[in-house]
Amino acid sequence: MLIRVEAGKENHVLDKVIATPGIKRAALVFGPYDIIAEVEATTQDELDRVVVGAVRKIDGVKDSLTLVIAEEKTK
Image 1 (cartoon, rainbow, N blue to C red):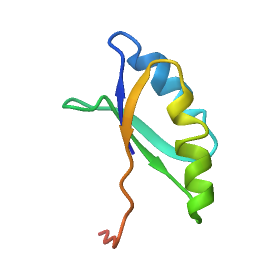
Image 2: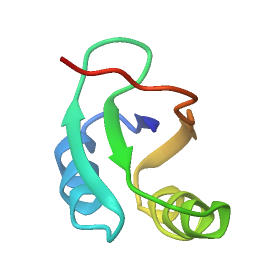
Image 3: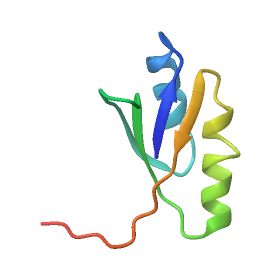
Image 4: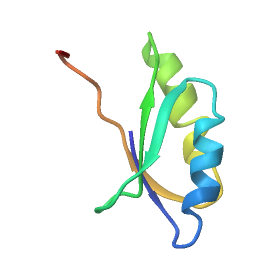
């Protein structure tokens, strides 16, 4: 999940995001988005609860982009 944040609220939003149930990890990043967060969800309803029901309601969140992994490979 990529999150765009109001200027000056990056650390506040990051603290709230990482405290959200269903968020596995989160980090501040440089670029068009300010935070990248990994959501752990097994159903679409669970993903909706985390993204729409929690993260998008955090004060300072301007918008977000949710990307669903199709296939993953790790070393």
